[in-house]
Length: 218
Ligand code: DX5
Ligand code: ZN
Image 1 (cartoon, helix red, strand yellow):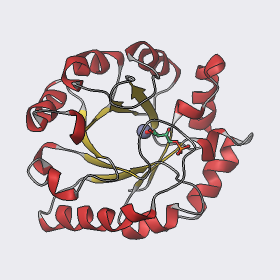
Image 2: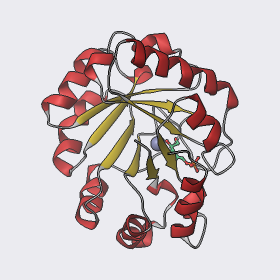
Image 3: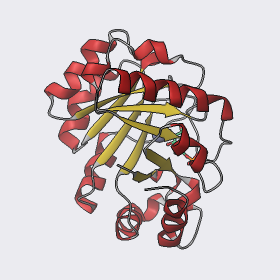
Image 4: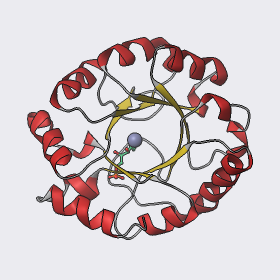
């Protein structure tokens, strides 16, 4: 199932609720929330209080992308703030399997994220514990970066791993996704598409979502 997930990192934070409602009206399927700690990535963004505020503004599922060290410490807080999906980076988690179980224990869907340089094999042993794989198509930390083509074969590889095990797991791509890059990602096997600047840098967000979706094959 195809999903478009606007990343609010590129939204106007002085009117965040309006921004979220606008993309909901424009046909967004998820709201993607980028949490950065200034350690795992060189940028600081938002925490549970922002998730709580977004929760009040929309009924859409909140897709919370944790770019933080030791995410275990904050799973409960993000679950209580209203996250529907929590994804953690393989590179930031010492006991990945335990962390993913912890997410599900909190009643939230779990996902695992791979940086562009991290191989698909690192998640082979946790596929049973997850609902989504998020493949970064830029190095995490900032919006508006250029898509890294070299990740495309990894999307296909993960899709094959999932099919071989007959599991039902979404593949999300994040970073540099726009009308020009989304088709190759879908062809490779992705079905959830994060877009920050491609949506929020346009005045008409409804048109932006429509244009992106029009590139995808149902
Ligand atoms: C990057 C974040 C992305 C970012 C995407 O670290 O994980 O979600 O907001 O922004 P764009 O779509 O502008 O590349
Ligand atoms: Zn993200």
